[in-house]
Every structure is written in C-alpha cells, then in structure tokens.
Length: 197
Image 1: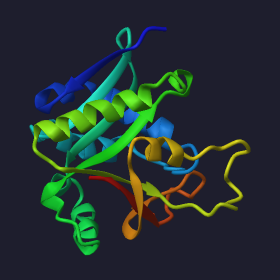
Image 2: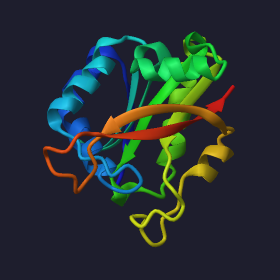
Image 3: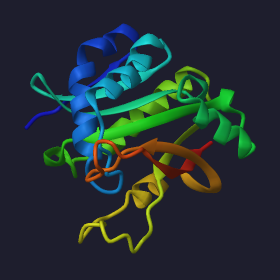
C-alpha cells in the first residue's frame, strides 16, 4: 500500500470533508475517546477548517481513499475553550498554532505517518510565525475498565517530538460516548495540553 500525503488549506479542504468526517467518527469510537459522533456535527466542525486560510489539513491517501488526516489552526480559530484554557495556563493563545487531531485507519499505523503529520503541521506553524505548537488529549484513568489489553498511549511519541505535558492546563469538552443512549446528555471530558515551544 502506497500512501500519498498532501497539505490542504482553505477551500481545498472542502472536497474531503465527508470522508474526513467518516474517518474521525470511526477512529474516535475507539478508546480512549469512545466518541459517538454524528455526521452533522462533524460537517459543522470541519467547515471551520475549510473557511480559515490559516488552517491546515494534512491528508493521507491510498489511491483516492482518505486513510488518515491531521489538522491544525491558530488557537483562536478553534473552539473558544481552547484559547481560554491556554490563557488560563499563562500562555498567549495568539502565539499558539493548535493541533486539532490526528486520525489514521488502523491498517496504516506503525509506518511513521504520525511523524509525517507532525512534520507538516510544525512546518506550517513556522511559516505562519507561530512560535508555539500545542494540542490536548483526553484524560482517562489508568485503571479504566474500558482500556483494551495492550493499549499503548502516544505519550512517548509526543515526548520524542519535543512536547511536554502541561499538567494543570486543561480544557473541558463534551460528547456522547459509545454505548450511551441516544437521548443521554453529552458527558464532560477533561483534556490536558501538550506543548512544544
């Protein structure tokens, strides 16, 4: 399987929104996010990337099929809770290029695409003059009974990339989890930031 990686900005994101929405929903259903997403929400969320010329989607294709993607945009361009959490942690959100997420079809993992995604996002952050890159990851208890056997968190990858966990700098986001009844309210989740100056 050969994979082609492209940087998509602004309007170039629009043609892959449906495929990216499906990929996000599929990947984030797994632990640790356990996200029970909807296409309607995904379309609204991803429209923000298509509308902002400073936003980036790094897309990985096998032929015409989207098999992975990684997103980034200025922190103030994301959900306001991101900028608020960064400011509350003593960081200037205007100096931060925020990495939204990376999703990759399981069949393509272990080939170095995670590093490729970071390379592209960090390069665009430098082009835009953002001296800080950051992202956040959901917090789950080590003994969470839903944690699969053999699960390996990505902390070591992130540390090798030069990121450090900002304990105490957290955002709260809500989503319905896999297995929740359709009428159940969304659950609040805490996400902790990782940063690389």
